[in-house]
Image (cartoon, rainbow, N blue to C red):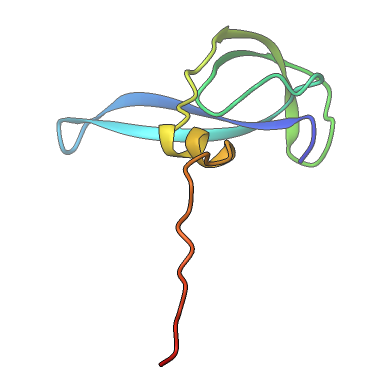
Length: 93
């Protein structure tokens, strides 16, 4: 899905019967014109006209960018190894 993001909105409400707070999550499809959003970003949504069957929101701004973790093993595997390799010689008697 290009130019689309799925935004999860959490909410807490008090359950009268169980006398507990219950967490519910709603997922909304939103339009991201420049594909700037990444996983974990906090965004502000504005309502818009229906853009598709499920998209009725537009990303107004990115409030906080998420830190993207790059494991050190992935960075090492991208660089070529410079250690010398041993060549085995086999001799037959």
